[in-house]
Length: 95
Image (cartoon, rainbow, N blue to C red; front, top):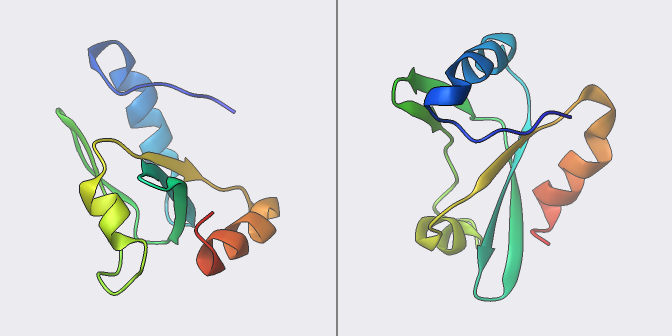
C-alpha cells in the first residue's frame, strides 16, 4: 500500500494513481464528534491535478452525511478486489 499527501512534490504519484483508477469502489473515512466514520462510495473520480482535486458524492439522506459535511479532512481508501467484506461493512455500518 502506498500513502502520500497530494502536493507539488507528489503530483506525479497522484497522476499515476488516478490514471490507474478506471472505476471501482472506495471507502471514505472522516472523524466526527462520535469518533471515526466510514462510508462506501463508488462515485470517486479525479477532477484536477493542479490543484489536486477529487470528487465523491455522498447521499444527503445518509445518517453519516453530516459527519462528512462538517469534517475538515477525510481520507479516500481505494479498495482491491479481495476487500469485498470491507466494502460491505462500510456500506451497512459507518464504524
